[in-house]
Length: 201
Length: 218
Image (tube, rainbow over all chains, first blue to last red; front, side, top):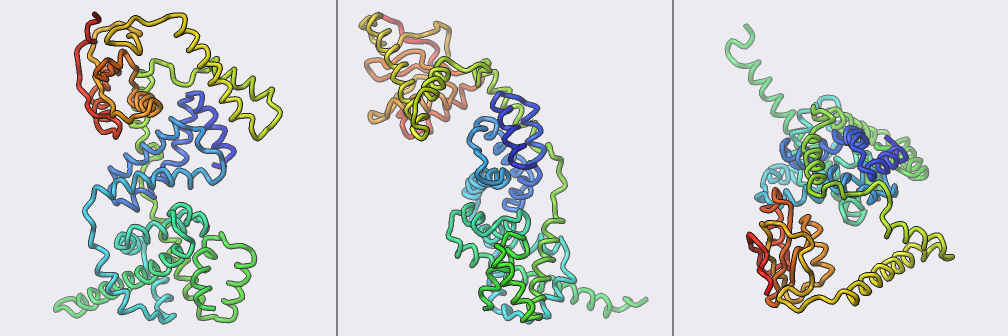
């Protein structure tokens, strides 16, 4: 849905038109949900934040003036709610393992990229994305899922463009290493299964 | 060369690079065929991420939002966003129309509209002098049974902030401030706990209590 159509619907929402709200909701909820779920990993919390974010649109439709893509603007609202949700959580430590690994296997021979591109699967990518830090994961999502430009990501993450570049670089290293570990583990399991007594029968 | 390639590549993949940067990346890929492996890896990553769409309905959370909208409507009893413009909006629109400076029109028109409304309010106050009593600033506009919220604001709380806070909690001033600084706020009964919590959490509020009725007038 383009911004012109969004602005038309917002004009109707301004006049308390519930049908227009439903239409707008259906058009953007899944993308917004994908962003929030990727950040929080909790479906119930993601549903709540999507609902709250779009309810804010209902309350103040005139706040969107068409200066950016509506979906990007929505993510900006949802992002604040996600940050509030993070505040209520314990600092997580799940990133430690791949942080360490990133230092040890960062030397990237080109063949490693080939091998990963051929073999990685969505589950593996999801698993490794979940192990990134919040900022790194968000950055990767905004660039590769939402297709945002460098300036848009920097504006959303409220940081300089160079910080976005650095986050992407480190995220790439960590993802790559995590995926390599997964594939190695998978290979070991398969090799183990093949070598186990009775495996051939 | 390589650091620039690393920086630009993600945005080359997602199609947001300028034409010049795009051409630079393509030139680099031609000169360094081995870098194509990174390109493929990023493309693969993008494909996997986009495949990984959560299996939810497009109405996820919609019912919750609609419930809030209906509750809000009930609370405001249809006063939200009237279809016809209010007198203030009409006055503002007229002023915007007659002012010559396009840049200053909205601000000037808003200021003039506020001045006009304030003039009416002051004139009304001059004509209808209030009786000296414990409750001086406002009389109860609607005399109804409680419960009410008795609120004490901090000494340095500004009137604007108080008014904004009352709007946020869907409250209307029923009476006050009394000589002890008590304000009596009426809120929709079903929202009483939520409004009370919100007021108590505000930085400009000293105390909130639920009371059954307004104080008796002397």
